[in-house]
Length: 307
Ligand code: NVA
Image (tube, rainbow, N blue to C red; front, top):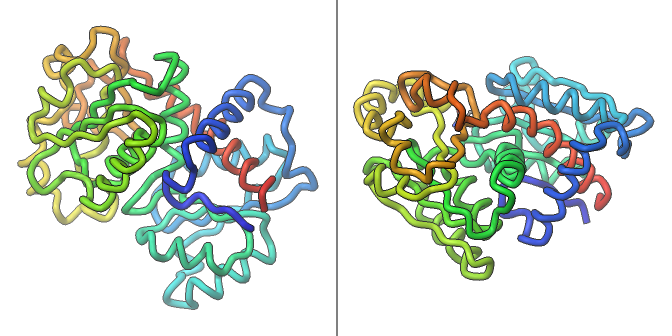
């Protein structure tokens, strides 16, 4: 059966650990695994702006022996020129896997039902699971383990990164606390499902409106932009609600003194993260950006072996 990676909980705890172990091996020996030798093509479709995702997938697919084919979502105009179903059927005849950044998770599901090849979520409004694989790899490198590690996600808990952190963190047995203003906590259904997962992994998911409470004692402090792609028209309200949740030196002083600070980027210095924090010694953001390549190679190789 063709497997897909559409949201973080598409991998069960054992599978997530397997993919992360593969990512570590890919990082140690970047040219040793060539499941795309041929070269086989992977289609990367971008309906939204991208930097890290495009370059890390392109470099990673090449390192796997494959051919990264970028499809301009604007030219393809899915949903206008033709439906997602027909595009999926066409891409599946040319490519061994499809990587897609788009707005709606439901469209990604439709793609996965019709492509006939593995489909990977390269960010939707709801989830950003590739970033979470890279982030978990980064935590393993810096903290040494995942199970039991305390994570604080502060800022827009309702964005894709908030949902992905609660799901992937729970899968890894981490203790994730989201600190967000009223109206910006993660989706209740996602939280409930993450808590179900956590009950079997020893993890936990907590929600609070108090940023200090969220961060207190955390070994990992995570934030993300306050205005995600597609939310630009809400900027004024968001820039009013979020300042208490900015990762400043003062907020960070409540975390474990050895805490690492994470951000998927792009970052807005002076808003969700202070310049002295993102550019300071506790920041691991460039490792996260690098690990996108290793982690995405691992999930592609893992999916292709099962296709
Ligand atoms: N939450 C952000 C992540 C960017 C990689 C967004 O969706 O814009």
